[in-house]
Length: 100
Image (cartoon, rainbow, N blue to C red; front, side, top):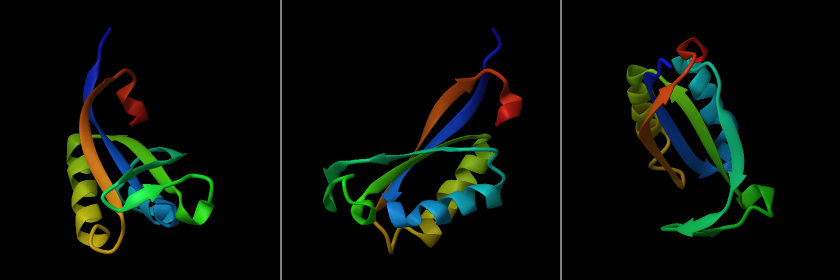
């Protein structure tokens, strides 16, 4: 089995940002993503998933390391100051790297 090192970027943000974040993923060259509604609590208080307007969304994308860094920089520069959101990067190893 031949595994290839990549980066997974996880973004948790207000649901109103989902389309904007996905557009950014396409802009930097991501080939796909996974998004789902999430709930929880943290610095900004509790977020429940029952009301679409106040829900959070988690978006995950697997990228080459340089693209992951570019994505995180853009999120920090363009969105962090104005919206409740977090983003983090994880090391992953994938089969079929051409999919990413």
